[in-house]
Every structure is written in C-alpha cells, then in structure tokens.
Length: 316
Ligand code: UDP
Ligand code: MG
Image 1 (cartoon, rainbow, N blue to C red):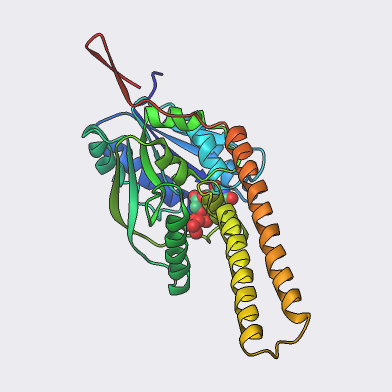
Image 2: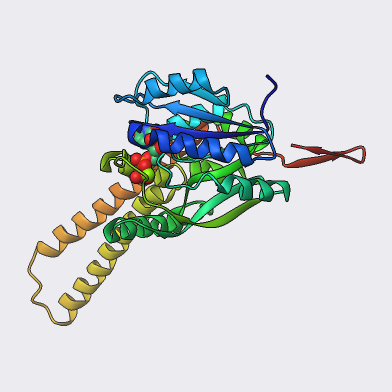
C-alpha cells in the first residue's frame, strides 16, 4: 500500500467508553474525503479494553494503523510516538480521542494547508468546561505568554495540522520533557490559528489528572523560558539595593536624630545584603545550568524554510 496523504494521530488512554462513537465518526468522515488518509491510534498503556478494541479494528479496517505503547507514558509522549509513526506524505493532524476536537475540521485544516500554511492550530473560542477550570487555564496561558522567550499562542492546544516538513523537524527534536504546542511554534514557518468551539467529552472521564496537568504546565514554562532563573538574579539585586537604602536611611536617621538601637541595623543590613549576594550567586549558577540545558537538549540551531540556488527554489 502506498503511503496516505494525510495521517490523523489520536492518543488513547482508557477510552473504551468513547471508542465506538469515535471510530464510527472517523469512518463516516473518511468516506467524504477527497484525499487518502490513515488514522494512527496510539494506545498509551490503557488498562481497560481499549487495546483489544484497537487490535480488532486494525485487523478489520486497514485505514487504522495502531501502535501500542508498553505502558502509560502520558499524552505528549503518546502523540510524539504517533508523529514518529505517521506515514502521511502531506500532513499530520493531531486530535484527542474523546471527540472534544471535531475530526471534521480535518477538511478545513487541509484547505488551509493547501493555501500554504505549514501549521494550522485550533484556537478554542469557548470552553464548555467548569468555570474554575477555565479560569485556571486562562491564567496559565497568560503567565506562560508573559514569561516565554517567544510567542506561544494563547488558548491553543495540541489539536492541529502539521505539514510533513514540520513533522520531520519535530521528530528530530530529541528533548525528553515535551511540550508539543511550544515545540510546534518554535519550529516556525507560516502558522495559522483556527478558531473553533471545543465540545465536552463524548463519553468517559478526563484522564488528565491534576498531577499530569501540572507537569505539562511546568514543561510549558521551564522548556521555553529563562525567566525563573533571571527572576532569582533580579530578586538578589533588589535585596542588595534594599540593604543599601536601609543602611543609608538608618545612618541618616542616627546622625540627624540619634536613638537608633545599636547592633540592630548592622544585623538587618548584613542579612539583607548577604541574602542578595546568595541569590545572585544562585542566579549565576542558574545561567550556566541554562546553557548546559540548552546544549544537551540538542535542538537544531535553526530551521531553513527555503533556499534559492542557481535560480531554483528549494524547500527546507
Ligand atoms: N491521553 C493519553 N495518555 C494519558 C492521558 C490522556 O494518551 O496519560 C489521551 C486521552 O485518551 C485523550 C487525550 O489524551 O485522547 C486527551 O486527554 P483528556 O481528554 O483526558 O484530557 P482533557 O481533554 O481533559 O485535557
Ligand atoms: Mg478531553
């Protein structure tokens, strides 16, 4: 069988409740497509019947390409496994298995791809989730944006379509803690946000525990920002400046008016000053750690989008 034009990567973790609904919706969608497509399902070490349902399906319908991970690695790694195995020659779409992301957007995404975009990412217009969850997400995305080294779009998740060359670049990024939506914007090229309404889960419960969400959140901040380290250094500077102001103020007060208790000033001054010195030292060590981190993370230095050689245009 020759390779399909588009792959749709779907990670599944304990999704037996939604499985049949998902598959029939995908099969319906496939009938309407004017291009060839494969569905890459990744079983992320499910402990329910998901894996069995997947094997049965893969044997009966060849448009499903099923991959079974040895244990639960988490959503980001499951999607990364899907990207590695997707054979789509033109593009790969990533979506969740719980039908919160409407698979039918595949067609609109591909139209944008044909218009020349390399990355089309879905932006949630509104979330049909609890107020508290929405608030936390909103605050998180703003915080992340304000500390990030470059622009990671707000309110976009992993639901997206990536051109073949973007997938190839992502596959060469060997970083261990993966925050795909950050890596996706890091890659560059022409990117487009596509607004949509995010549905509620079709069935079953969210598999993203608070712990997994926090982990993802920290990856989003620490993998794409030097802010935490710089913040320590700044705090140290503030501490030293405060110590000096305090010293000057107390000296002034004692010369002009007297009555400042002996020893107290020196103690406060010394504590504040040396706390500052220690914070700055930590920040300095942090700068080296950052450099080591950047080096071992081993991302490519840059990505070439296009070259023109001997008047011929060559895509990167
Ligand atoms: N998922 C996964 N591994 C996990 C957790 C989730 O592959 O450890 C999959 C899950 O099956 C679903 C997608 O990731 O297809 C999104 O998960 P979920 O709906 O639980 O997250 P939420 O939408 O609540 O953020
Ligand atoms: Mg979900």
